[in-house]
Length: 130
Image (cartoon, rainbow, N blue to C red):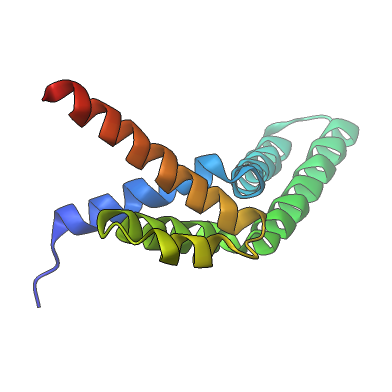
């Protein structure tokens, strides 16, 4: 089975957009990266008290990052509703979008709003081309 590289790149690009839009997921990844960096930096520091402080900050950041990522479901819900909404917009299925949006939580609504915003931008761009 041949994997289409452009298909994977599209999914990855869309997932990164969803991470950026979902502030809990963005904060989670940022805290995780910062915490790992702090742990490594703590190993390079010569002073014991400073090393303990930096390592503690790193551990707290990692914990907060993991909590934020788990709370936001790693942004997967945002990504899923983003893709679903884009598909509905392409099919011009407004009723289905309303069904998706009804009862949507924060992560869901971020994906829905991102898809609608991109669709509207694309429509405006195509309007000026004609």
